[in-house]
Every structure is written in C-alpha cells, then in structure tokens.
Image (cartoon, rainbow, N blue to C red; front, side, top):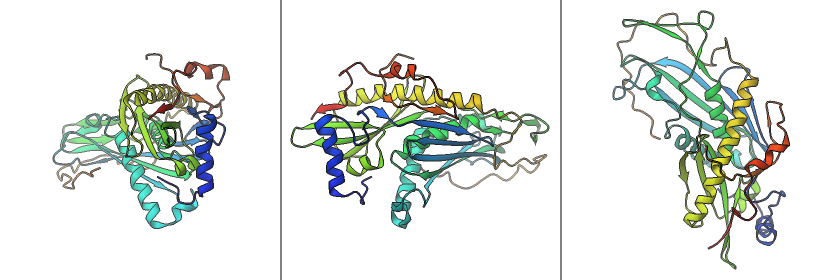
Length: 348
C-alpha cells in the first residue's frame, strides 16, 4: 500500500539508498529486521508485540456456542483486525481506514485460519449441539510499517497464551467449570505460523530488483510491490502471497523462503520465551462465557459462516527482547546468511 503522504524527494531518497549502497534509509541491510518484543498478559489470551515502532495488541476470547448446521463437529474461529485512529494520521480518513482493516484481516485469516493453525474439530464439545467459538481481535496501536508481521506474531502468542474452561459431559448435559473448580486448559493450537514481508523495488535503469525484509512505513510508501511468506518452526512454508507489483523469479522467491524459515524460528522462540515468563495457571480467558450448566442444546445456529529443522540461512536482525529479557547477542550471527549467498538484489 503506497503512502500517499510520502513526498517525491523522500521516495527518491529511499530508492537511492538501496541502489547506490545496498543499505536502507534507517541503516539496516536488505535482510535486516527491526527489534521485536513480545509481552503477554496480565490476562490469558492477551499479547502485545512491538516491531520497531509498530505496536500491535491481540486478544483471544473463548465462549460456548452452537455450531453451524453444515459443520456440526467443528468449532468457530473468527478474526477481526483494525488500525486505531491514533496509529497514524493516514487512518483518520474513513475510506483509507476501512480499506486497511479489511486487507489486514484477510491477510491474517490466510495465515492463521486457512493453514489450520487451530484444530477446529478439537473445539467441538458435543457434536451438533455445542462447540467453542474462538474470537481473535487485533488492534494496531502504532503504525510504522509491516503491520502483518507484527499482527501474526501477536495472534500466535495470544493463541498459545489463551485458555478455555474445562468441561464435563454427561449424556446431553454439559457442565462448563469455572476456574475455581478446575484449571482452564490450552487451546488446540497445531502450529504457529509467522509471516515475513518483503518490499520490492525495481531499478529501471539497471534492471535490478531489490527486496527489503520487514519494510518500514517510509519504505512501504516508496516500494513497487510486496511479497509475504508464512512459515512455522517445523521448517514448513505455509503460504505465499503476492498482490501484483514487480515480477519475481523463482530463485528470488526461494531465497526469501529461506529467510522466512529462519525468521519463523526466531519469532517462535521469542514467543515461547515470553510464555515461560508469563504463566497462565488459574486464570480464565477474557470474554469467556462460563455458565454452571448448559442444558438447552436443541436450537442449532442457522447463520452462514463468514467468508473470508533444517539449518536455513536467516535474516540479520538487531537486538531483540522478550517480556523484558534480553537474549545474549552472541546468538545473533547463527541465522545470518553467508556473504553474498542470499543477497536480496537480483537482475531482472
């Protein structure tokens, strides 16, 4: 999405930095990322992620509901995302605000729901009668580019941190226990996909194409296109999304995939470290509905569902922190590519 408030001189400066020295306006290399911080709590299912100056909050709420008639044994997973009007002056216009909300929501759905990050069948309580509904809300508080990567990291952290009430089933009677009766249990998270976004720039004079990992707002305003890949810690590419822009060769996408795999491992380890620092025992997910007993299970929901470890060379990144803890900088070189092997500049 081009930032219409970026001046022509600013666009030319961003592009000239890449073309003349292979460095970016903020001093990073092409495969460099901004510092990432993950914070959880205080309530279960609440996560805050900062990526440079971009700040995102994700909240997961779980409640019991009736399933859709055509999917009687599957729980519900809904995702909504929005940019706060305080995230940037460009979001004060209603037309821009709505467009970015829809775009971000669809991108998160492709990454989380379409890759079956949550096992929907495991959300079933009583087939055809009662299932868990997982509602994921994402809010971009501050925006300085690359909202998608921050949002998917926040959603993954919130899902792992969330809890649902324990249940007891006796025939057609379902008892949903409070946190005082039984300890809430984790959600059935199969894997936690993480996205890596690249901004593409084309030098028409030389025919070279430059890709910048984790683009800032300034770079998004000057880019010619974008590429987003999602992967998990199991070294699996979960999805690739490219909405037009500069055409890319297969070899270039493969180099981006290698960086994405390493980035997924790095961010997932950040989330796991944050989970160790923020326990959730004895706490109940915000927004959960916890009745003592569910007895009326005869009326189904008739509404329609909403549409919607190989060692891989990885990205160079700045020092990152997890919930206040700063890992040693000696590990930062473990995921860096060999010199010139994965340079994100190609001849078109």
